Length: 154
Image (cartoon, rainbow, N blue to C red; front, top):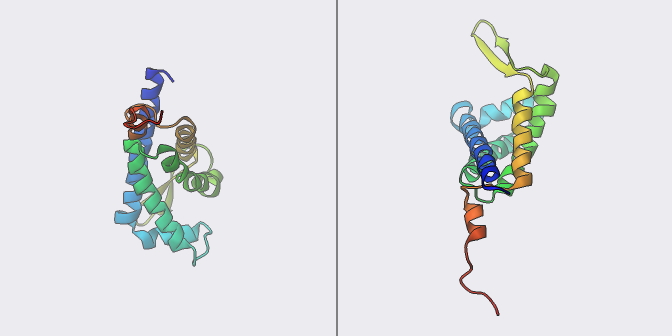
């Protein structure tokens, strides 16, 4: 991998990390775990499993996103995002069509959600790309890989 390619992967990795952390924050602090679980139920997740799914999404996005930002355990941090993003693409947004658009959910209250799968597909593909290529430059993983070992066996 060239230096320029390493920085390109780092840019994608860091931006993905920020996106995941912000979505984890949204689930934890704004919507709340119970609200995320209720949303999961509305998308077809059984009610007894929904709290587990909600907490998986919140923890995976917060912790995995933070790990992506610093580039530690990068492949694992990316892989834990894949089930969430694949579910978002194929179970939630695919029926809404490709292009993102606002879908009014409650006109009286002025509530709308973003529909369409173009964004979630891009995030899924970029996450898989990071999982396949590794951390790139500016990462703890890369620094550890290039650090000289103190003790070497003869």
